[in-house]
Image 1 (spheres, rainbow, N blue to C red):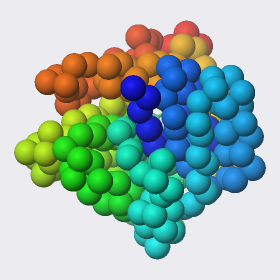
Image 2 (cartoon, rainbow, N blue to C red):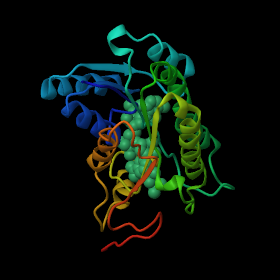
Image 3 (cartoon, rainbow, N blue to C red):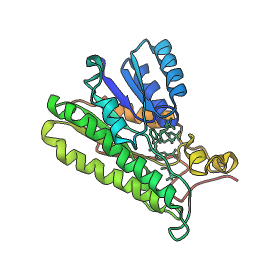
Image 4 (cartoon, helix red, strand yellow):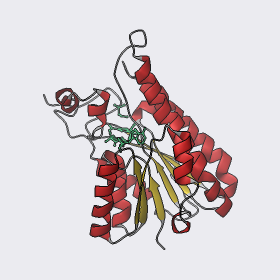
Length: 253
Ligand code: NDP
Ligand code: 8X3
């Protein structure tokens, strides 16, 4: 049977790759993000390429009112969400705490922690009522380790790690699957956002080694949903082969 898969942050990178992966396997997808033009274009592409149903929803995950409005009154054919991929997220800036920009901190905390919570709070009651559903949180190696100048971003991803465990405890009796996928370096728009539009600095992050592609992470997310009902991947770290941990790379420069 076709699933309904809700993917936050589907306008680029990992979320976009997940939209293609799930739609490519015949599932109907709800794609979200703030950039409406991109969502509309992606929606057309997915429908054309895969003949699935697509519902594009434009909202900011930091706005709880907008999240509730978009997700708690879905048209009936879309209301039974089988898989929620909490992917929308970002890093902004890299600095010490003593020099850090508090606006950057607010953006990361509001998006990566509060946004994930708002979306999950809107979607999870339907899953628990039906006794079926799968929540996949995109964490990070930054949720397993803390690296220099990563402080607040790492803290938000440690929160995603903790919340994944908490959601699993809270919903185990209703049979909900809860998975965290924690990637190392993936070449997307992530570093461009982190370095506030500095494309040269962003691309230098991925020089000298082959980073993960967004499709690698999407494949793992899709695989997690193909396991039988009794089996769940709780936590999965996926890294480029040339990356041993958050700070150790095999780079040829
Ligand atoms: P991208 O910048 O390519 O994609 C981020 C997505 O999140 C975009 O679709 C963006 O959409 C959406 N988004 C950001 N802020 C908001 C918001 N306030 N409301 C709604 N949507 C939002 O980066 P990635 O694909 O790399 O990042 C996806 C996830 O993967 C993030 O959670 C990131 O932390 C995590 N991650 C990334 C890694 C990497 O190396 N790239 C490694 C480990 C984890 P829009 O701008 O249209 O709103
Ligand atoms: C993104 C990967 O290593 O920049 O979460 O934190 S890293």
